[in-house]
Image (tube, rainbow over all chains, first blue to last red; front, side, top):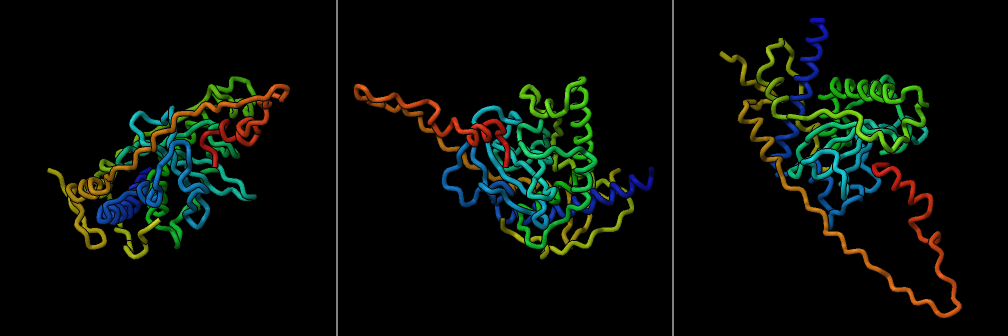
Length: 227
Length: 75
């Protein structure tokens, strides 16, 4: 138990350190990840995906796009949200999680929706855990890809808990119905959410953590700027 | 008394103020969406004896278009 807590503290400290470096890069450029995604967009429109085909990251095993709905935001304060998918082979992409973003480009919450919202295959939490375990920053990733990889790693324990909660909620709602029917049930929309407080997270693990953890070797040159 | 409130990572002193500054300076306003154009009502003039356009011919009634609409956040 103590060992797993130690491992978690090391994990969090490592990824918090990476996130802090990335955020300093963003701050120096007066930008953020979503602003980077929208950098070449003249007219931002609702219901369109940015970029249209999605942005590949983490050795092209993960894919993301940003969009905003005309109605029905995922969070009351969101400007729009990112949808993050993972490659499961045979040209199939499974939705992993959504990330609500406020009007100043800051993450607000993780969210998980029913399958019909994002379409595509539905992976249960055990299968998605394998995808998380294989997630590493890609050599060619820019600021956006690195930021997403770091966030996903930093919150991997939280996200796995959310996925478990999502699956449990679906089982409970099914009440004897076929899961395939549940996954297309338009009355079942949002399944799990978790708010994000980056400042508290960074302070907790970079300043107030007393765990005796080795400081990571971070090469700032590995964290390339640009989309 | 709080201990260990400043750490050195990659040669940068991390303090609560440094974290707040990094977050604050990456707070940059995202673009507002374009105002949607008011939907235009097309005026269709039908000559006497000419067939009315079939509703099913509209692009948005095609299965592909419906599919996207049915899954608003699909790839």
